Image 1 (cartoon, rainbow, N blue to C red):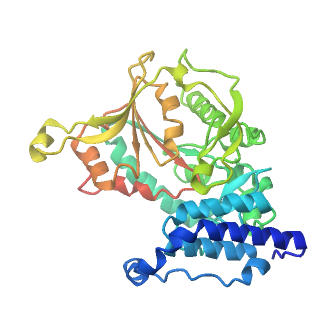
Image 2: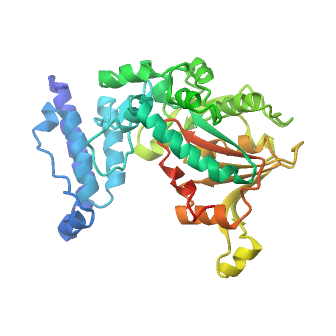
Image 3: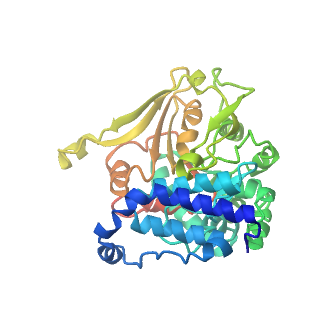
Amino acid sequence: MTYLNTREEVISVRIYVYILAVFLLLPTFSMPYADHAARSKWENRTLAKMPEINKLFGKPTEFFSEFDEFLNDHIGGSFEAIKFRRKTAFRVFNSTGDLYIVGDNTGAMFLTAPFRQKTRSNPFQWWENICVKLQKEGYQKNYLNRVLESKKVVSSRGAKVIYTSIPSTPVLIPDQFPASTPSRYREACQRVTPENNHIRAMQTMNPDIEFFYPLQVFKEKAKDPYFYPNNAYHWKGESAWVFIEEFAKKYDLELPDTWPGGPCEYKMVEWDIGQLIGVGDETRGCDRNREQLGVEIDPHYMYPLNKTSEIKYPNHPGVKVVKMTNPNSENDKVAIIFSNSFGPEVREQYAALFHTTYHLRLGVINTPNMKLLLRETDILDVDIAIFAIADFHYPNFLIAFESDEDVL
């Protein structure tokens, strides 16, 4: 528990409160006109209450977490207000006072759970997922069942299917967790190793499923903060290039002559975690020149329905996907990538290995449209199908590939 004991700390808190109060003055006027009871009924939950003010000086971390939830529920423009609060807190305390964002600007920073979730009952949800739940046999079997269902659908036309999992910071640098990290998560994440993890366990359960998870290589390189910037939420920079180099090596795919081999360019960059939470937006990092790959990207390609399906759906133009073409390709292979939000950071590098590559980001393409693509187009007529997901995400999006009559 953190207490404020010095006169300087108390004064800093008061200044911070005054600044925040002024900033919130205008949106606060909207509170009397908002129907909070209707929102509570519509969302089937009790809206957050204003935390007790005495917690501000005795339990600031608890106060700030409760206050953010109150802003989310009651005040217009709350998201920007919360980002402003965090920025101000960092200037005063070098800490956000929020267990959903732990760390500081002088070291690693971690986003520990969805920052817009409606309940704050589990601030370390993502760490719980990867270091605790996913390391249990029952969860691994459930995960594997979903993988098997999706493989049955995607491989139905002969494609080779590979499930790639992207290593994330909780298992790469658990020794950099801040002191506020509960010991159970610190110890659990340290137990996840290249020899002991959920991907390796599932591969052992079913050797016929192709999993790619270069945890060993990433752990060796992760001590270099430029490799996988420790202030990034999505993976960035050099790590994406190394991931594809290791992928190509394992599956005997040739890197193109246009592949930039490095060294990567070191510079100050703005990472997405700052856009998400308001702090940690600038750090040192490095990247290579993607334009050198020569991959042509059409982010709004409308994939057409089959001729027979055009009769069934005369007013449906198709489904929008990302199409990438590599004019420098030495092969005529076609690939498809299914991913969550981590996919866009590596899709160009993937596309450099093939002549044509389609990227389908689950969440952007909803489940009905995904099933329409799988059922009413020839998009699965590819040489290789790749699933690219972060290792801390339980693959709930695989529901779109369940082998029911709507898909096969």
